[in-house]
Amino acid sequence: MTAGGRRPRPASDGIPVRLLVCMLLLVLTTVGWRRGTYFAGSLDPVVAAKGALSVVALVVAYSGARRPHLRVGTGTLWALSALLVASVLGALTHGPLMAGAVVAVRVTILALTVVLLLRCYPAMQFFAALARACAVIGGVAAVTGLSTLSSGRLAGGYPEVDPNTLALLSCLVVLHAGWRIAMGTAGAGAAAVAAVALGVVWATGSRTALLMLVPALLVMALHMRRARVGLVVAALLAGVAATVAVFSTDAIGSFLERDGEGTSTVQSRFIAWDAATTWADDQWQLAFGGGLSVKIIPVRGQYWTEQPLDSSWVSLLVQAGLLGCLVAGLWALWTLRGALRAPRAHRALFLGLLVFVLGRSVLESGLFDATPEFLAFLAVSLLAEGGSRRRLTEEPRDDDGADPAPPETVRRQAALAR
Image (cartoon, rainbow, N blue to C red; front, top):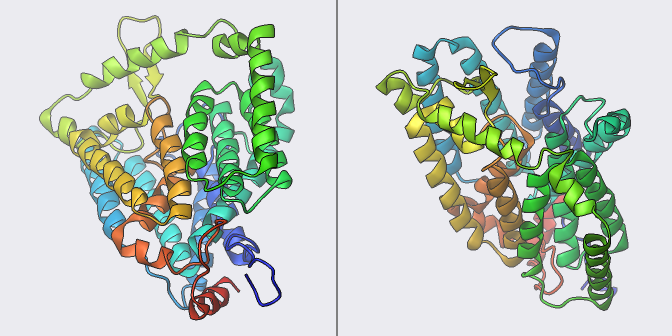
């Protein structure tokens, strides 16, 4: 409490303009601008524009690096470097070296930008900016893409993101709003934002996103110290409404079947996964893959000859080989271990995000690429490792029961936030 009897403002309030601008650029450059198009190494206006905006974001982040630095560990960068090196070594023999190298450079620029931002701004401000950027870009994409609803799934208009990416952006907004509600730092406004974002997720027809959103929110709810009466009543009413919808309408069945495609998309994934196990032509490709630019794999025994890879882990097997899969698996487990050791408020957010992005990565690709989910995973990994967790205990708390940080820490964090 402050001297006037008021609670201090949460650390996520009042996002600095520099941070928000940089985050908008990061999210904008990590979503697709053209549906159904994959980068193959050629330089076109879209590729050039996204590359230029990525560099602008890096410059904006670096311009704030002259401020007092917050501690950020380096273990995550070693894991990422091993992953990128493996992919580039694989691209040396597979053929698309230039394309693979360009994607690796894009991921490196993204990682450096995130590190610089986390060295300048508290963790809660970073994730608040990420959620707001996803809300702005996802909202614009959803509104301008309303005409795509006639096809059965909502997709983006500007930018032209696919339904799964639009659902991802909306889920990140829901998770941040749900975390703030669980920690007691938000109320009806955050609930309204979450409800709108959930509506967008439903309209996209992304079953994987909705499936993983539920356990992620439950993990956050388990960190609540005491539930407010209004929150309990709202949750009960939502549960009753959901039960009525399930038993009195076919809304759930229609969503799961999605125009009769209920199992066909899962079966097609199995076809690509099976092809990925025999994709490598030699031991080198089996160990190092073919580069991060490999997004489509040849398939046999079907009336189609190639298919996109729809799993981050199967994609990684093709892109970075067995070495890359091993590094990524250990990296994910190490990040989960670090998140479990974080302070309560941070732990709730970190675990919720990890449950969502790691669970989604089983059926959706993009976790280890220049994508919004990689942006969230990388930030959690950097903050959850031992070299960074010490600073989390000194940041202003964003929950409803913890003691405030020491006055000198509050003053230092306020200076960093300006």
